[in-house]
Length: 377
Image 1 (cartoon, rainbow, N blue to C red):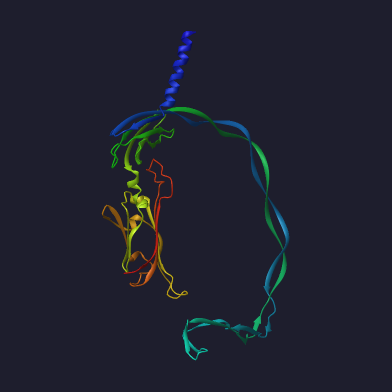
Image 2 (cartoon, rainbow, N blue to C red):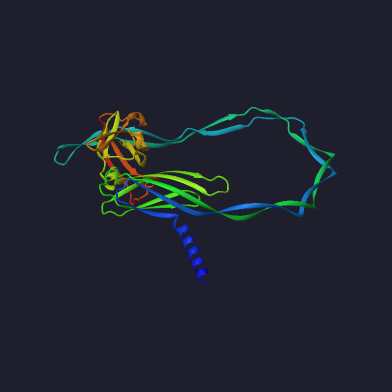
């Protein structure tokens, strides 16, 4: 009885170890590498095939002669149709013109002449259209007339009949296969002196290796991870996985600077627009929405220079005093701005926190905005 209990306990411990081996946690405190061994049991569905006797159906054709009247058409007798008078209304509608401003003067009760400037305005009036008529020419009309003929043709119908047959059916069964993974982790801290992270690495049945991280330090930091996974799944043997994961840690405030430091030093000219944001560390995570337009006076002189959402890589990016200066040349504009004219400029810089390599989630609206009227240089 005692030996039976020992065997049961041993089997239970093996089962628990297999389950626990699919996920491990690593405390990162500044070391450069870690190596992990993970495993998991994969349930794989396979099929066996066998033949069974059954009943099948098929469609049997039958041909028979069908007769009846068929309708055809031919040209009938022709006749002359005289022309008609066709009338329509042309022109008319609402017509507008601009009346320039003028100076209006009058003499007040004390005998002094008082003048004021009246602004220009638009005057519109409705003008009736005119009725225009013309006569269409006469024409020869030859209508089609129908006639019938008795015809016979073969028609095919189908009946369903059953017969004995053999069918092949698939029967599923489960095969348990072990997935073994060797994971090499490398760490690099770019600008955090004492990083502290709890890193979890999990092996999935597919062979994919998933990594997550949680910052346990009082100093806000972010972790990125880039994975390279090689899965050897040949035949019925165990599945072997080799994974290399490179991580890098950055200071959170420094990395989010493009959207937390605001948009400064906005300059607009006939050749380009430029502005300064916090230093950009990852161009792929940055998009810029840019709208430059001139309203004009009651619709006159309205002009739109650009209204697009662009990638950071569309800009020329240079470093200025530890910040990033973004410059967009006028060849990206729909219309070049005119020097000396004022334009409404709206800029929105966004950072995409859903980047696949960022494994420490960032919440909130990562966005910086600018809106002002600027004179083009």
